[in-house]
Length: 434
Image (cartoon, rainbow, N blue to C red; front, side, top):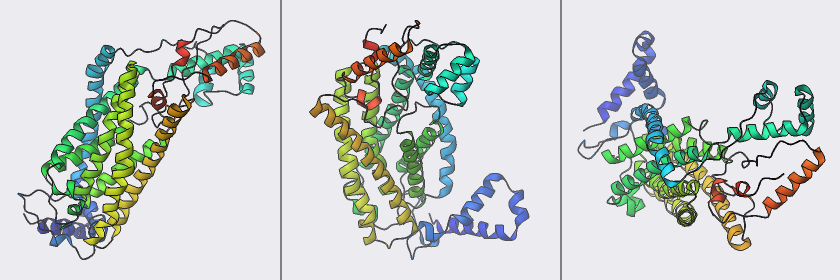
């Protein structure tokens, strides 16, 4: 099938839109969007190496399709479908499975209904300073200790339960496992999987197989769904890094598809999926309290992550896109943009690898880890111990609190993944402080 006529028609539509404003705005929104995309985005200087034009692309329909930006429109409804499927999966599959594995949620004391404190909590701060505690105590007629206790209960009340975190991890585990299995099955027999120079041979006249088309569309739809749900998911300490990762991945997948970097793009996605499902499985068993299984999976994940993200990705993938590709075409806008996104991902890989190695060093050589080092840390501090609300001197309370904290700092949980998921449940194992 000759794609030249299609691109000629698309470009002619864009040119005609300049001379026919009334016709453009009388057409459907989808047609107007496609026309604007063709006029502003389908420019050879952006998508194709120097000397290549859309008219020159010839692809046999039997060999596959040629990717065009219009195909990415379907990823938005697909992302919404992923969100709906996740909602059903978590309630019908993940929750019962969490109970089967023995996931337990901590029973937390609900904060009393005090409108002034609730307003301050939502609008000002979740952790008031000493002066603010004194001021609130005067306004509400409560002691400083009761104010501090109320805020502690209120913060614990908002923290996600183990079941919620298990459901999120199980959903991502299922997708990454299916994506990795399907991706490996579709790539293992391709020549560019073993020899990355084949990623650029005859570029951009490279047909995209149906399996690789769906691999791209499903991955992009899934990452769009993750970005849409990032505000309601469990918030981690590396929240900003995760958002940057999702945005960079979406741009990387979308641009590589439009510029027909599909061959190297499928390899990039496979490299990432190879360790992601191991991480999510380790989290699941951690929330369930299966310490040995959790430790074993984390060790395997750490090895796979360090090899794929610090050796394979920069040594094979980035080297291929930066150096090997220049043997087949001269650099153009797409070359620089694509490699910039890959380098952003590599910077995130180094950041997360540093956290893993730092945590492993403390665990192996120091015998303890005083704080979480992994990217899966939660943005909030650990659940605070629920103290009995008995009256007493504020200074003695502070002394007792300091003694408790010093004891907690001297303990370390032997479960390696506690340093991965910020689930230091040491507090729950200590007797209540009185």
